Length: 356
Image 1 (spheres, one colour):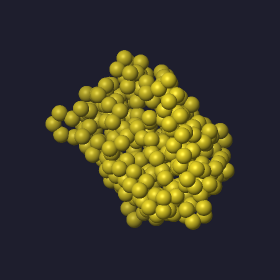
Image 2: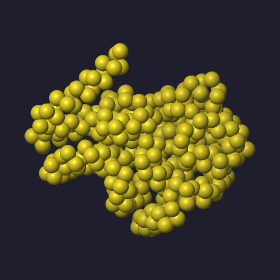
Image 3: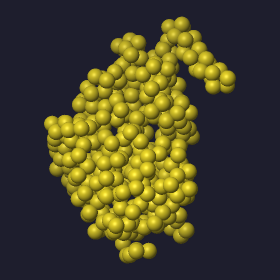
C-alpha cells in the first residue's frame, strides 16, 4: 500500500505540473545524494528552472531509489521518468555499442590524466548522439566517471591465480562475461548489483569490480584484501532524456536545457574523478590502508594480450566491424595528437610484493 501510495504521489505531481503549462522531467541515477558531483547536478535544477522562467522543472531521484539502471530504463520507456545519468550497464541495452567504451584497456589513461578519453568522447559524440536518437533518446552529454578496478580476496600475481577466482559477472552484460572468458576465469557467477556485497561476504564470489569511489560507497572493499594494480576499463556515464519528453519542450527551452546541462559537464566530471583519485589513495596508501596492491608487469602484460580476444568475439555481435574501426580510428587520432602519449603503468606499490 505504501508503494502504491508513492506511485500516485509520483504521478500526481507530474500531472499537476503539466496542467500549469510547464514540463516536469523526472531523472534517475545511482549516484547517492550528498556527494560533490550530486550537489552540482542538483544545482542544474535551479538554473534550468530560472533560465526557462519556471517552465522546466527537473527532479532527480538519486541513490537508486527508483531501482537499478534496468528498472530506471524501463520506467523511462513507459514515460514514468524521462531520463537519467546511467553507466554503460544502463546504456548498453539501448545502444549496445556503448560497451566498446568499457572494453578492457581500450583507453590509455591514469587517475590524473584522461586526455585520450576526453578527446575520443568529444570527437565521437555526434556518432553516439545519432545512435541514441534512433532509439528514442537524446544524449545530453557524457559525464565521465572513471577507472574500473578489480578487487579480490587473495592476490593475483599469476594468470593461474586469476583463473581460479570465483568472479562476479554483471547479468545480461556481454562485455563483463567476455572479459572473464578471455582471462580464462572458469567460475563466473552472475549476480545483480545489490547482491554483490552479500556474495563477497558469503564467499559466493571472490572478486568484483567498480570505480574506487564506488568500491568505498558500496563497502565492497571491506570484504577483500587486494586490488589489481591497474585499472582494467574506463566507465563513462551518459545523461539521457527520452526524445518524447524532449519534444514536449519548445525549441528555445530545448536549447536552454542542453546548454545548461553541458555547462556543468566539466565540473561534474572533475568531481567524479577527484572522488575516485581520493578513494584509491585511501584504499592503498598509508599506514593501515585496507587493501594491498596485487599483480606485476608480467600478469598485466598477459591480461592486456588476452583482452584482444574480447574485441574479436564481440565484433559482429555487439558492434559491427565498420563501427569498431570507426571508433578505434578516432581514439588512435586522439592518442597520436597527445604531446606525451600515455603508457599504462602499474601502481608503484605493486612492485616487489611477490606472492604475498
